[in-house]
Image (cartoon, protein in one colour):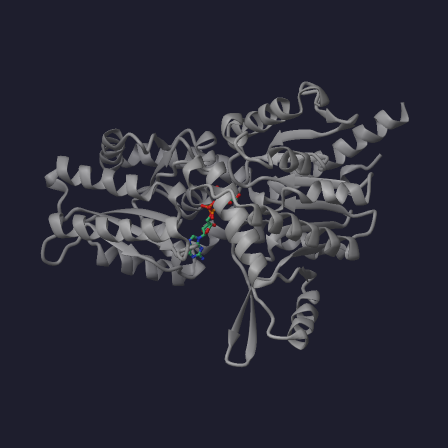
Length: 480
Ligand code: GDG
């Protein structure tokens, strides 16, 4: 039996659609920079240790074989293994099946789902490509951790290659209710794909229930739900709410650079309450509902004119896709409308930026904001809410969070909203604006206590511990 000390020395292969790196073409040279996403930070130190690796798409199409070999060599130095994709694969597997089938389905948008056979074919082909790339580097003692909805078929492909392999899978986005999941022509293949894993993890209990309901509905007699197993092999399905690198955010907020920038922002919006929102351009984030609620707030409380600003940082995402293009146009229209109706010389109610900012600047925005507003219509977790809490030393700081974001389950001291209930949301925003500093500080410190304890490092360790336990249970059952 492995003891927890031994577990930490087991090599791990992380597999995700994207490698945690950005490769940019600068003139004739390639520039490699580490990406700053939550997953990259959380697993960053982990995969570099004792011969562990990370496998995924490097986000670039090499110009020729020489360039491909060069990228491969450079990445190898960082323990990263690339899986190169063609333009067609990116279009049909990534933009197609992943983002125009699974993403809308998992975010309650069945009308956005494009059920194309060509997408499904590409999805199978690319998952197979990942399986082959894995086979080339994995050794039987390694545990494998597959991430997210782009690779749902991979766990079973890997299981078929090695019956006793140690395989974990984590689903970062919501898992839809059975009624929605059942509409997929390929529902059985996708579920069977996931059930190749020994451990399947989700952010919330609701997602676990939805997944188990789908499994029971589709496999019926094959599955034993209470003692979950497929063809006799025990599979654990559990909740692992992802955390953030708390130290990184709280320390950055103390740096002189961030403090100076934050002060500049505050001066720019002097005597105004700064309501911040940060998200990728996506229909799941409730950006339209947010603007509606803010407009209603100004309408109901004209005394707030000139005293409050909605500062929206939106990171460009998938904006060549029709639904996203439409969303962007609608945001532009609504921001223009609110600013023209409620603005006055020298003051505009909505400050809207459609670009990403460096980490230090993002941190300064968190630090400067009086309120952080999360309006997700459905969100696996939502790391922004946790990053905001971690970046604050003390009040003013109020988190207003949608009850449909996974993070709301842990953050019970935040003000919770149903973003579809526009009037109620605007009333809650008013409550946030008026909240006494003492109450803000109490709520903030309660949330900080939770987030500083359940960090991303804790999340990784917990998942890995659980994976080892499942393997031990399987071995004991085999030995009986
Ligand atoms: C998926 C699920 C789940 C944003 N703007 C900038 C920037 N960001 C960073 C934030 C945060 C990340 O992007 C966004 O993470 P979220 O969790 O909020 O949302 P998704 O991207 O949709 O992530 C989600 C997550 O996976 C993890 O499981 O929580 O539910 O949808 O870290 O800080 N970073 C920088 N500049 C920006 O302008 N540097």
